[in-house]
Amino acid sequence: MRLWGGDFPREVTITLPRGETPTFPLAHHAAGADWAETGITKDAGDDPDVTHGALVIARVAPSGGGIVFRAGEGVGTVTMPGLPIDVGEPAINPVPRQMICQTIIECATTYGQQTDIEVTVSVPGGEILAQKTWNPRLGIIGGLSILGTTGIVRPFSCAAWIASIHRGIDVARASGTGHVAGCTGATSERVVQDLYGLPDHAMLDMGDFAGGMLKYLKKNPVKRQAIECQTNRGSAIKRLTIGGGIGKLTKLAQGAMDLHSSRSQVDFAGLAQEFDRPEVASATTALHAAELIGPQMAQHVAERARCYVMDMLNGVQVDIVVIDRAGTILARSG
Image (cartoon, rainbow, N blue to C red; front, side):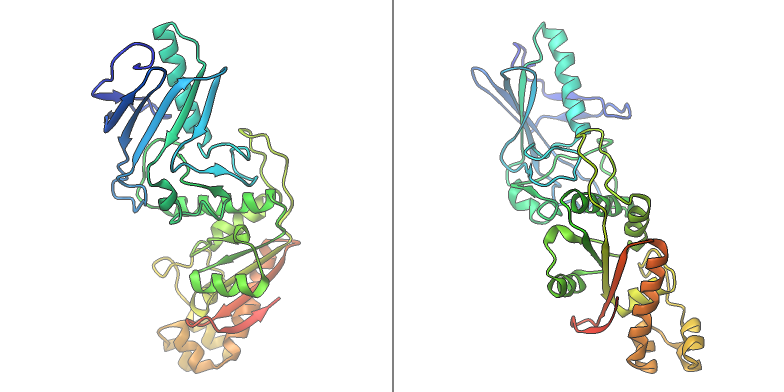
């Protein structure tokens, strides 16, 4: 509006992908002879989002032809295949691009202009914030991603974490990485990465969501075709390593897909029966059970977990690494 002869409004109403029409007050605006920019402050609500309170700025200027996107300060650039944006492009996802393009088309019609616009998105301080996200591992360098499929921030959810695991798998496949690893936490991830010499982009942030990782690998033996970027199908994952502490991997070995303590529990009665140790039935933790059973429990867990995962992923080589809290390897299988 400002670039094409109008004034900056105090606030702006936009249409989200699902039809909602929120109104945002402008937190920033500026203009020059052939450019104009404005910004709003991101409100992540109850979501523990590192970008809560960040200023998100869009600058528009004439382009050499068509709508062109640029990464400004604090917005990353895609450097690895496997994401829905081509390598070399600013990390502005397809839905935000569609929303921006639609707005430009509507304004061009109102003001009688051509849609030859360069859009530069910036998030001051975004390069530092991005170090607290998965972007570096996904090959998004220099800043944050401009995400969004609905335009609405939801409180942190299982779905959000699982979606990040899926994108990690896509990137690994597209880059020809045949060996990936999913770990339950930072310690097991460090141990497994050092053990196998894996690159960062081979490390999937599995956390408690073993099912989210395994089901995606099973349903998508090679990279899903991404309509937005029309990339080639990626290579298959040939080897999967899963690492974690004995508690969570015991639950995996017993068939749990969600390893969080509030959503799955170790079957102590089952362990007692398998090892013929009745006292294990009254154990309070997997570590307690391991103390009662002895070192063979860790190896048993590794082997059972490996068999369970291999049954799900036909043709994929599987390794299991069980560690203690200090990062010492207790057992390996595969």
